[in-house]
Structure formats: structure tokens, C-alpha cells
Length: 432
Image (cartoon, rainbow, N blue to C red; front, side):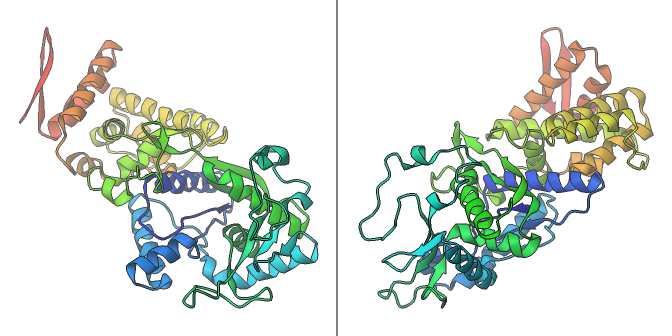
């Protein structure tokens, strides 16, 4: 499995967390299903944004990218994301990129423009647009060829950017095509081929990468090697803020480390996991507070009954439902629903074995492995919005005659110093 990783010029935001958690769950499930998984998640450390930021900071590209990679690892570790098998840095794979560009040139799929750039001749690759479903005519609408760049076609994209003689400090490498640096798309084609071979099982990344990045990867890799690049393509949905994609370019992003100042890491992970990886996910403090309340309901069940150790056995009815959900395109919402059903049954039956199943299946998703009592008592004091949300959940549980869950919520609030008082007119609370 190859997943496009981060361009390391700044701290990771929640959109990056969504992708990292989504594919962490994918590789965890494949392992739990008995597969041997080689997971490659690259790091883009050659990019115009990186060069611009390094110049602004007055530091070298290597110094900036080393710092940001360390920060990435800190954020990922906090979210319980397992390290990939390999984490190649683009800067270490320039020779492989040059070799692939040479192959494309020999096959008539690449040419050198007047400005010195090596470009990919899109119309000479018969399958262009097959991933995104875009036709060449649709793509060409409104495009114009810049007079000075020497492109044969406005759809052609750069493989190797020629160095500019007017910029003596420019980041560049020597090559058969002249001094310069690689384009973005060729980096992933070269790294994935070197790590996993010319054809591999799964290629993943954010939905915004489907076009043009992944479309261009296919053109490069399949043009060079003559076989399918990947058997399955997977794209995770965006995290939205006010129904607009969270991104640095829009300035509406929240870094992982800033969010972790307000919410514990497992809540953030649970916020991502309980939505399907392909669905858009709306960010707000209300949604994160709701995720925290829901996660505490699961931990409340584990706090009430010491879990018995159980080994994964997919014939168990709960495990079988969990497995069916995950086998249907990694259906985490349905898998999480199994966890809540288990929690309700644990609250009702006080079964240590069922508590063990709750913890074991939660662990497949990277959840519920903390000490329950410590988790419930740790962190920031509950805010009013979260308390009211839990009171509403308790009322719903009572209405559904799930009195074990209602009692569990009362107990969990009491453990955090929140005392509930029921009356004919409703439920009030105060801090004990």
C-alpha cells in the first residue's frame, strides 16, 4: 500500500490527521484479516512551498523539513497512528526520478521544452483521465499554452523543472536534461515503484489528489512500465469548516497540535474513525465534544467491568458483525455501532467476557486501550455544552428503557465531579 504523505513546510492540520488515521485503520484491518502489509507513506521534501518557507525563515530546506518531519511524527504518535513500514523522502530518490523521466523520453512520452523543462506529453498516453473520469476535451476547455514555456499542449505537465540562471541559490540537481529539480508528480511514481514495484495493490491519498496528482502518476508509471500501477485506488474525504474544505491555502485550518490543547488525542481519533473514510467530515467544537461524550460512554462500560482477555475469533456474533462492516469498504461507522451495542450489553449484563470483546474490537481501530478509570478522570474539566450533551444522551437512553446506559452516564459524570438532579421538570446539574 502506497499513500501520498505530507508536504513538510508547516505543522500538520486536521485534514492531514484525517488521511493518516483513515489509512492507519486500513492497514490495521488488513493485518487483522491476516494479510502481510508493506505500508509506504512518502514525505514530499522538495516543493516550491518548502523552498519559499525556508527562504522566509532564513534556514536551509533540510533544516526546515527535518523540523517539520519531527513535528509530524509527534502528532501522528499522539493520535495512535502506527508508523508506516517505509517513509521515503523525495529528496533521496532524485536518481530514480531521472531514470523514469529518461524512460518516458525514450518512449516518446516526454519532451524538453524551449525553457528547458521536461514535460509529459499527455495526449500520447491513451488512458489519460481514466481515474478521474475526465475527458481530454473537457480538460482542455479554457486552457491556453503560455507563449514562453514551450509546451506542445496546455495539458502537458512538468516532470523536471529547469533551473533559472538568475537564481544562484536555487535548489537544484544536475541531470541529463540540465540542472533543475523534479516536478511533484514524478516523485510519487519513482518512490512507489522503487519501494513496491511497478504494480502494487493499493494506492491512497486525499480526494483532492485524484486529479491531477494521481492521474498524472498513472500516466507516468503506466507509460513507463506498460502495466497497471495499482489494483485499487482509495481517496479519503475532506474535513470541512462551514462546508468548505479545510486547507492552508484557504486559511481555515486547525493544526493537530492546537486541537490537542483542547481535546485528548483519542477523542480526535474517534472523531475521524466513526465517519466513513470517503465521507466529508464537518469540524467544530460541538462535533468534537459529541465525539468525546460518545467515547466516554464506551470507556464507562469498561470502567464498570474489568475486561477479560479474549483472542480474536470472527465466529463470535459481535466480531462477525464487526468483520462484515469492515470488509464492506472499511465501514467504520457500522463497526463503531457494534462497539456501542457491546457497551450497552456490558452495562446490562456486567459480563467480563463482553467487556473483553469491546476492548479487543476497539483495539482493531486503535481505540479503547487506555486505562478506563484514568481516561474518564483525565483531561480538561467538562464544559457546559458537553455536560448538556451527556444529559440529553441519558434522557434518550431512559426513553429507550436502556437504564443500564443511563446509569452509566450518571456514574461517569459523577466520577468527573458532575452531580445530576432529576425532577419532574427535567434534569439539572452542579459541580460536586
